[in-house]
Length: 302
Image (cartoon, rainbow, N blue to C red; front, side):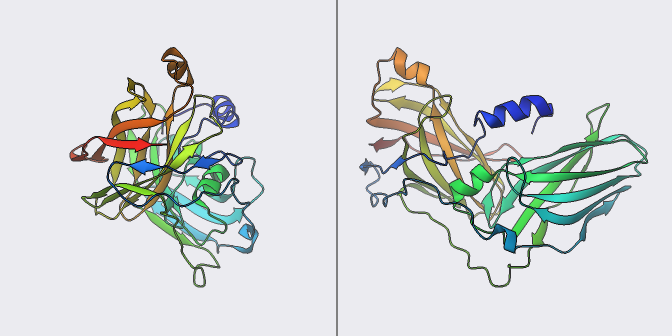
């Protein structure tokens, strides 16, 4: 994540420009045919469910990081944040450097989710702050309660922007973890499965984002590498178009994301309805940038 000022970030989030989001009141049309010949997508709900029962989950105070002169303690869960639930943190910096603390590779209940966190703490000081999860992602993934969270911290020098510490993944289980039943909605048309990657097309989002219409996807990473999935050579109704899509999925996790098209390009090509989309997926190792697989062209009919 790039370091973004709080004002710009708030504006962007308010305008719903966050990736991996399905509009909370948007409709999703199932695909009618996919060239791979897999089963058609099941009917998608017209409206995303609310998230009851979040407040039932709690966490015990626990130290998440205590090394290299920095200490991060999780104090409690909160559920009344503007953008979604979060973890209240106490950050202590005795590293000898002024540092910025951010979050990486966050997941909740096995789903990748976006977070808001960027905290500056000068040497010798402390800060009470929070790591916020996007409730829009909870809605897109169907997360109704928090059983577990997995996060990593990226800590860097405030002045030089040099990495000071990247932590390993940290797992936090809540009070409902032992009794929680994990379920994942992978319904839709499987357009690729191999190399530890499963990609499902779930349908076309009818309510447009600020950019344009989107295709909802479910991606599962069963491999042992953290991956990034992007699109290549995208066309709609035979016209080449730009697609906004880049999804990071750590090993063993899954994501619900959207392939978004520019409304301005649809207008330029006189596309009033999306009937046929052709694209391929480029999957690569997020750490080493090495290609894992480039899929054959995939045709999706709506």
